[in-house]
Length: 314
Image 1: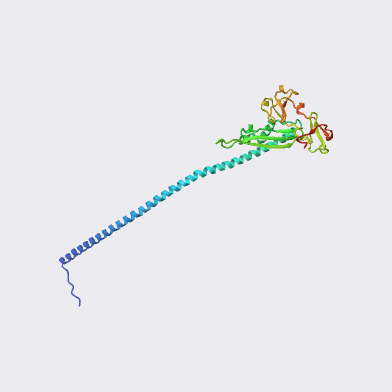
Image 2: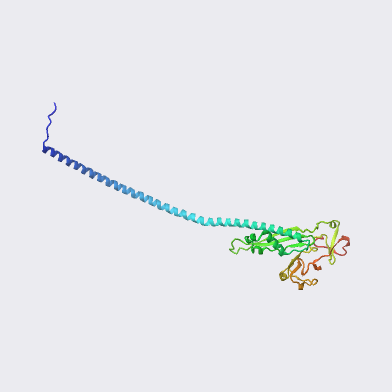
């Protein structure tokens, strides 16, 4: 049988409510104090860990920055050394290609000039260096020469050593010029170049004629020796042409000076003069007897007291 329920009075109800509120406050106060203590402990622990972590990353970042700075410095030094060398190698390659192209152009121009000289050789057995030079310049082109690496451009083509051998009609074109480097530093000198072209003049002569095959030799009217070859340099004269104003600077193959010929009165000559590589006289006319060799073909038994030529008689 259940106990009879008892109704609370107002005073009892108020007391219970006050006591409940007091207990709740004390409980909250206890919880808040405990919670605050735990929070303080956590904050201290988090602050300590944060400082350690921050210190670790700061030290690591400093080391990384130092390594990065060193790495950047190494890369900068390598770039400073490599890029100029690479650029210099490229310039040298282009320079060598241009030099080769220039040599090919001059060689082709010399071939053209030699062919034109071969057409004119039947008129006179002499070469005019100025004419050969103009033919070469015309074959190459003024514009090409003005953009080339030849020192002096079109004026740097020199053909004064070109010659023709009257006996055989062989034309030898000798072209001399100088190549200038792309940059004149450290006293780099000019590079001397020489191109040679040999061509047979169109005069109908054929080497190895019937006379040579039959044992004949060659003599001159005033000579003291006989020659077995018509191509002997003592018989054929390499005649060159020049201006009388340049005589003082001309030298023969023995580095001797040239003097005026008495036969053609070259002392009073004006304008063009003619001379040989091995001689010591210059002449006012191609028809001068000093430029001619009256060569006769005779049998060896008819040479008389003449001896053999030291060059071709061996």
